[in-house]
Amino acid sequence: MAEIIENNSGKSSGKRKPKKYSTDIDMTPMVDLMCLLITFFMLTTAFSKPKVMEIVLPDKTIDTNIKPMPVDKNRAVTIIMAENDIIYYYEGLAKADSLPSLIKTDYSKDGIRKFLLKRNKPLLEQIIAFKEKITKGELVLPRDSVNSELKKLRNKDKVGPIILIKAADNIKYKNFVDIIDEMAITNIARYAIVDLNHLELKMLETAPK
Image (cartoon, rainbow, N blue to C red; front, side, top):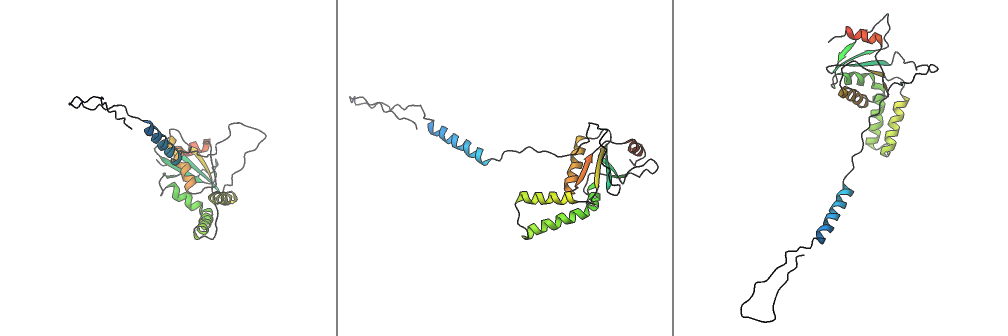
């Protein structure tokens, strides 16, 4: 609050002197208000959480005593990310005497996503049925339990595709992010990032551009 100081002398000279006002302002109430505002915004503002992308990478340590886990050829799907935002994929496993043809697609919803949704249809139907029960109120579960049940459905999947993600030279980091996003969108239960083999390098040489 501003202090008003009146300077009145005891004697009256018949001529009134102008009043003098102090220019000092008490800022104490403003400091209290600022503290309240800072506290309010700290309590009401949500802190940004770190975003972590979970991916499976090949183990760089080689143990000759551990045999690599075989991949079911009926479930195997290999996705090869090439430059210029091109994706190639083939089903099954490549063999020297019978090289599969690479199918060209892209990262759009009508590209690799459409194919993955079709291949993963059995698991997707289970997930949709479970979510419908939650929506209709037939199942009442907290969010953590819902996520846990969805994870169990993915772990129990025995027929869905096993995606092997591979990268050619000169691809963008964005391509990795996009393909991992597609795995989440299409609810792929099992996928891993692995290296190209010599057969696939040969297949890329004759792939459609």
